Amino acid sequence: MRWTLITTSFLLHIHWQITIPKSAALVATRQFPTKETRPADVLNAQLGALRDSDMDATFRLFSRARRLAIADSARGDAREWEPSQPKINSQMRATLDRECPGLVGHKSSRVLSMIADPDPVRGRLPMKICRVRLGAGQYFVFTLTRLSGYDGGDPRDCDGYEKCWFVWSIRPERKGKSEASVKNPRPSLKR
Image (tube, rainbow, N blue to C red; front, top):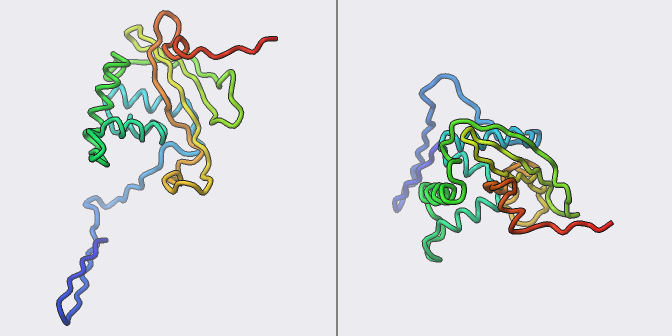
């Protein structure tokens, strides 16, 4: 429905128009993911979006915080408050091509493992760590996080995706170890 308000000095006109889709069947858009969506389904959707080079879907499947960071990196400078989605997609594609060569546009993939964080930090978001093999023999580690519930803080966090799983990071795996584990080894508990 579109409203147009036209005012003159003594007369007020209100014009409204209802736009009906051309197809007779109304298609309801379903939210994805939902609270019930399994992490494996989110991972498979992200792999499908990357295979199809669909940067819009790839962007949507990253967590809220990661999307904010990606959008921030696409800003030219502080004056560019909200970069356009095509600019964000272009920046994200360039980063993925540089950091994870072969991932965008890959032919096939297989999820080899998915485990819960073996050393979770109390009070932090739940995580799943996934190992993926591309058909070309490349390996990647995907980290998924489950968003927190809305706590009454920033209204942007109340978007219907509370408690949903999203992709937090994607890292190439080289020589049996992911880049993340080499750069940031976790301290082990001494027994």
